[in-house]
Amino acid sequence: MTPGTPVRSLVLWFPDWPVTALEREAAAAAADPIAVVERNLVVACSASARAEGVRRGQRRRDAQARCPGLTLVNADAARDHRAFAPIVSLIEERAPGVQLVRPGLCALRARGPARYYGGETEAARMLIGALREAGLDGVRAGIADGPFTAEQAARGGTSAEDPVFVVPAGGAAGFLAPLSVAVLDASAMIGAGAAGTKDAADLVGLLARLGVQTLGGFAAMEPDRVRERFGERGVRLHSLAAGHDSRPVQPRTPPPELEREVAFEPPLEIADQVAFAMRVTADDFIGGLGAMDLVCTELRVELVGDRGERSERVWLHPGSFDAAAVVDRVRWQLAEDVGADPSGGDAAGRRGLRSGVTLVRISPEAVDAASHHAPALFGGGPEERVHHALSRVQAMLGHRGVLTPAIGGGRWLAERQVLVPWGDRDERDRQATGAGGLAAQRARPWPGSLPEPLPTTVFADPVPVDVRALGGELVDVDERGNVAAVPAFFIESGRRRAIEAWAGPWPVIERGWDAARSRRAYRFQVVDADGSAWLLVCDGDAWTAEATYD
Image 1 (tube, rainbow, N blue to C red):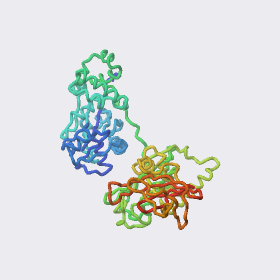
Image 2 (tube, rainbow, N blue to C red):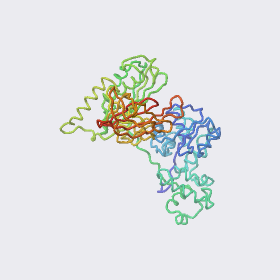
Image 3 (cartoon, rainbow, N blue to C red):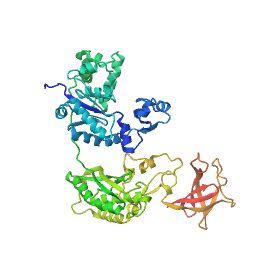
Image 4 (cartoon, rainbow, N blue to C red):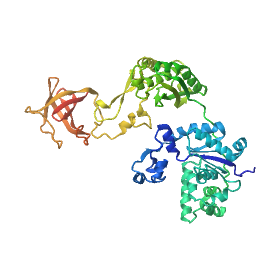
């Protein structure tokens, strides 16, 4: 085979993979109309949504107008990759040398599978059959000279009745000629990154303005003229349009199997039994990471019940997990699902799992180099001893047996004090956090929250006080935020304190849309005759001390 000759390629295409990934991971109903949106545009939709008129590229509003019962889900590249990884592994078991193009699209050289399974079509049908047995229906396969042409064959030449389309050797140019130049924007720059995709999109738009609508029309242009007008990127796309795709399929290097799982038959009802059975697997899990000079800093634990219910959580660690810490996390997760003592066996009280445990799977969510966690030459000092002591106490008392303080979000000082279980990292230090992370909470707008500097002493329960004017009348605030009288003194715990200076009021308005739960209060900062600064709150006719400035 001469250099530059297109190699026979087999491409497997999984239509609407973001929807399939959502259904497989989140247990979404396949019959429900679902659309995955990104940047306010539909990037994938289910068959039921498509039957209602929803299409890729539609605006969110237009899709909802076509299908009022449409469920919208934000695009998640991590979810798509995570769900597609085991599919690629399944394909590699039957035809090694798979190139992962993107989630929902993979390519491999057709020659090896064709010789082993008795032909290109037979190889493609075998792979589709194996995927169908794994619960993946609707997979399409295209075989042609080069991965670009094979992808177009899978997308445009297949149907539900005949999911395999073969472009004969040497027939790529004739097959591609009637296709729109828009396919270059969608898939021609595979592996070129965001910049390459943008270049392809710009060139496609320019070709359309020049009146070149098909790949055949683009291929008919002189290569020298294409180079003069569009540069090397244009020459690259020109060769693809002509069917001269000389890119080789670049097989991925399969990642090492780092996850471990244990199946139980019959299912286990008692958490301690599950934890005891996990000890050998946890040692093997940590040993496998150690063989690669890695440590696990974030651990994903998945539990599967006998009735099919699932419990999944990512556990964090201030250092790195050892085997005992892995077993502890499994036991704690079971205890949280049961809602009782970790050794309890009452399956009826479980929140996540309502039946016995049939499968436990542990996998590293994040790893780090082992050298970053090696003990110091002369010991780790007080910090390491504190860590080991608190970890041992937590192992005996449970996940929330040892708590550390952190600052969260909110308008009131007491609710901003958050207790984080020991071992869970402070989410403020993470760039990307979930909706419940401390960083996300603090970053939200909190109108009425107290600006810095904050008081040093915050009362867990606000202390009742009585604020009076010079004549003894009660000081209050009207609906416009005006103080009825000048505060002269306040009584706290039976002690009268003269007010030397005061500032305010600053309104705190919560849930104004809910008449039953709405709250309107006003903050004051006052300094008494002893020089102590107080933060007082007027809530209707009641006054309380929220904190003091020491």
